[in-house]
Image 1: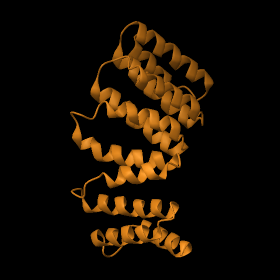
Image 2 (image 1 turned 90 degrees about the vertical axis):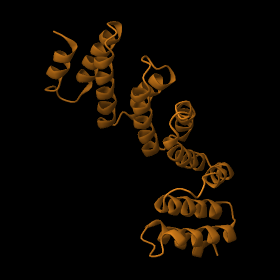
Image 3 (image 1 turned 180 degrees about the vertical axis):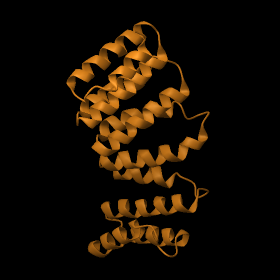
Length: 202
C-alpha cells in the first residue's frame, strides 16, 4: 500500500497514542523514500494531533526540529511550518522557543519584505513575554508609520501598554492619543484596556 493510501486509511482511526505511533512510522518511511509530499502531510497531521491531545511540548519539538534543520528546501513549505509553529508558541506563551523560531524566520525575509511588518509585531510580543520591555518598545518604534491605519492603532496601543510597564506614563498617554488619530471612534477594544491601565497607573 502506498503512503497516500495508508494515510487515507488512518483517517478512520481514533485520535490516540496508537494513531501517533502509526503516523510516526509512515513519517519515517516516507522520509527514507524521499517522498516529501507524504512526509509533510504526515508531519502536519502529527502536529495537529499532538495539539488536539494537549501534547503541545511534543508538537513544538516536532516542528522546531523541522525549522532548525529543514529536510526539504522549499520556501513556501518551510515558511508555512514556521508560522504554524509561531501560532502555537504564542498560545502556549513559550517565548524562549518563539525567539528561536523568529530568528530562523528572519532568514526567509530578505526577498519577502511583505512579511517584515508581521515579523516586527511577533518580535515585540516575544520581547514583551520575555519581559525585555525596552527591546519590545524599540522594535515597535522601528516600524514606520507608512502602514495601514489598523496596524498603526495596534502599534501605538501596544506601545502605550509597554510604556506603562516601564513607568513612562507621559509616553503612554502620548501613544494612546496618537492611536486615536487613526481610530477616532476607538473601535479597537484595546483602547478601553489601555485607558484603564493608564487610569490605574496615575
